Image (cartoon, rainbow, N blue to C red; front, side):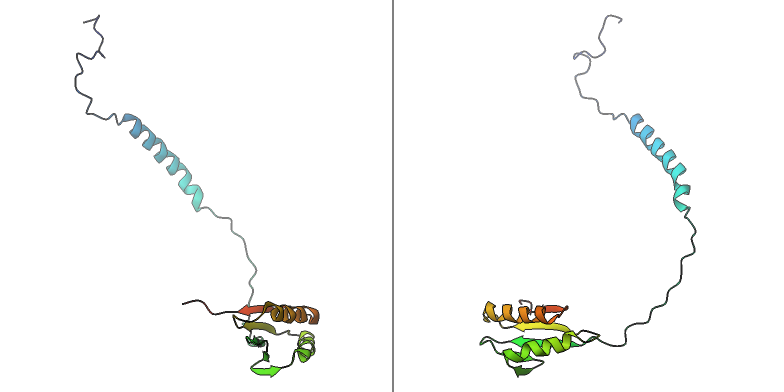
Amino acid sequence: MMGQNPFSAAEHTQPMSEINTTPLVDVMLVLLVIFIITAPLLTHAVKIDLPQATSQPLEEKPEVIDLAVDAEGKIFWNDSEIQVADLATRMSDEAVKQQQPELQIRADKNTRYQVLAEVLAKAQTAGMKKVGFVSQPQP
């Protein structure tokens, strides 16, 4: 018996069907101890006295300028047609206001880019700070 190898192939013809769970239990116990120790530390918080602030919602809605450009290059300021020459003066009048309105540009998909570039250049020259494009999502 002493000279026999316990791991020889003759004695173990079938694979082992038992899983050694001792290492698994050891790891789980270590994790349990770690969580028991760290759990009370997570409930402690630093008590600070934060300043209280009150804010009132804005009752005044910002003014919006709806600038539409159709496929032929005609420009509409809040649904009324204006000339390109009048556009710069109107924009500069709006840009000097204390509460500057938002300029929303709606353009037809067949509008030439040159017309839009001119409108944007006039808005920048006039000092308009809030300029945006309005589009419709595709169905």
